[in-house]
Image (cartoon, rainbow, N blue to C red; front, top):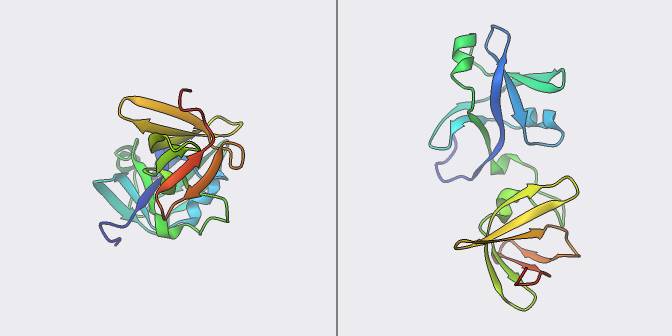
Length: 171
């Protein structure tokens, strides 16, 4: 069992049923999608009420992926899990390569531009296909900055808790 304060991150979601023996369809946020099965244990549910599952079996099925959670042996039991998040311990993921970051490690960092203007904290990131976008929130104001290292993102200091960007404060 994980320590209550150990950081977890969402790697997917249960989105449907597959068959009558308790299999579920997944939406995986990992790349490639099937990589979600490399991580164990899974914590399924919401952050405050999740059930731990070790050694989850799964496979690609058509254009999606399906999983069989230990102890979930009927369609009715599986149906109760639809909409549940799949979380894993941050410590279960490999250390990112130099210059690469897990989004969860960037969330909450302070964002400043080159002139020292505070943009707020990273609330979340999202992908546009062309590149990722960092969302810095300061009160009601949100700034969207392309997360392109070298061009717009000049420094990421996770230990220091800040990101420096080359971005106009008025944009």
